[in-house]
Each structure stands twice: as C-alpha cells, then as structure tokens.
Image 1 (cartoon, rainbow, N blue to C red):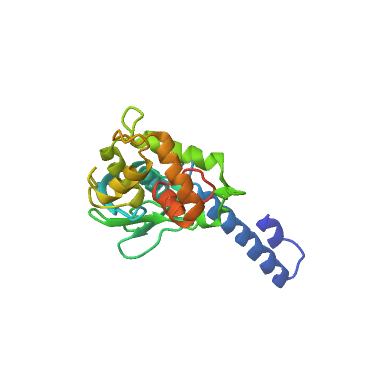
Image 2: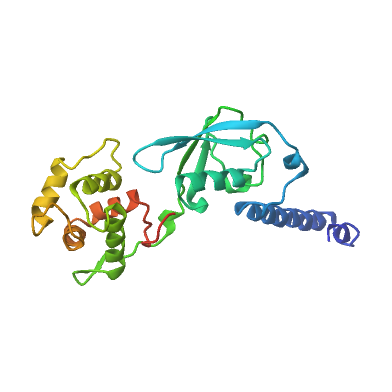
Length: 247
C-alpha cells in the first residue's frame, strides 16, 4: 500500500500524511498484539539459548510480602515470565504488574521482548503487584434490601470449608483463617483473643467447634454492619470487585 502511495499522483505532503497514518496504524497493531503475549512465536533472538538466570520475585500483592526464586533462560519473553510468576503466586496473569529493580515498570507493549533485551541479569530482583485492571471492574453489592446476597454467602461458605478440618472449624483452624484473612505475618493460635471472641459469641453449643451456621452468622452480621472490613477481607483472600477470584 505504501508503494502505491509513493508512485501515485498525490502531492508530497499528502503522501507523507498517508504514510504517517499507515505507520501509526501498524505501530498500534504491533502494540496490541504484544499485550496478550506472542502466542509462543519467538524472534530469532529469542530462539538463541542464553544462560540460565536466577531471579528473585518479591510479591507485594498480599499484605504479607513473600519472596521466591525463579530460574529462566535469558531468551524467555516477558509474557512467558509473567505466566511463570502468576502461576507461582496464584493470580491471573492479566492482573500482574511487574517492576524491575531499576524501577522500570514493564508495559504491556514489552510482552514480546526477552529478558536480555530488557537487560535483566542473573540475581536481579523483580517486584510484583496488582495492576489497575481490578479498579476498572464495577463493584457488586454485598447485600440488597438488608439481606446478604447468595453469591456472597457462597464465598463465606467456601472460606469455612477451606480452613476447616473435616468440615468442622476448630480453634486452631480459626486461627489459621484469621491469619490468612488479615494477611498477618505472625502465627495466630487457638488461644488468641480474636479466636476466643469469635467462639464465645458464635460457638452456639460451646463444644469447641465453630459450625458453619455460626461462621456465616458472624460474616453476615459483619457484612451488614462493617462492609468495608469485609471488602478488605475479600481483597486479602483474592476476591475481586465483581466477587470473582483474582486467581
């Protein structure tokens, strides 16, 4: 098409404008194609086997910052690295923001580039956080007309069974749940005051087991009286604004 413009009878200025627009469209197409990775296609540079890199991944997504080491070759693309990191920390790759140790933030248009191209070296630190995608998701209601929605109760029920032992939540189980839902770095055992407060009020038959009914009653009451705290709990346990999992 550009060749046709060059040999056409248009003025030089018209030719320049048309070619500029064509190049802009081509640039946008290339940038968009990078955002979801390269569909396993690699440049000649990426096909060359380059030395193994040990990268320290610092996960700032949860309140409890964690670190992990990944081993990848220098010809790994940024999208492939993001997929590896996302699988290790348990989130969808679309929500992952990646920042290098020199404070360079990886853009979606960098996905097809290799680690060597971005000058990532052995022993470098990479910092993970959530991008702004979640903020663009409309926030659902936790309750309607004074009643907690079935979808929200389903989330609480899933939490209960995830942290219970054989379908029953002991005091130690409850401590593990509180540690997870608050993002605490410290171990919370069954004698913790928060556990005792919960059991004193919601262990209906005082048998040392917090039944599902008691757990749901606690969270239903919290949803109606302290919705912001419940949203914070959900965010810590990987629930998005639309009540779907980040994972």
